[in-house]
Length: 172
Image (cartoon, rainbow, N blue to C red; front, side):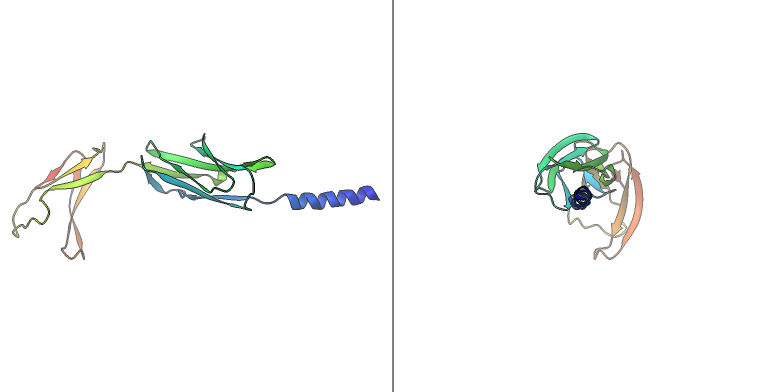
């Protein structure tokens, strides 16, 4: 009789000790876009909240870094463009939780700096006059197009004018 009682108690204790873990990466979000060479905060939530252990962060299948059980973020600066995948795992002395279905995949793109060099700021042009529009862009893109629009002074409307290739830097 004592044996049966002990088994029932053990089964109840085992049911209490096993908790469903939910770990969710909150930033970046799946399918989002980030900029190359710009800091990115990787953030996550976990339930139930642990009181020991550490989180391990993997980027593109490679170990990146770890944080303590109480931290829920880690900074990363992506050094290359393209698609990247982040996975956060929890590890403690009593086991851990790591589920690849909780990973997020997002895109890292190049940031560009575009400047209009002609006409200068506050330049006035007579109606019907020709004007040359020139611009610079850094870094120089390897592909793509520029689309030039005219926006009304009040900003209430926008009209497409022309599209230029990535190698062109002026329009007359």
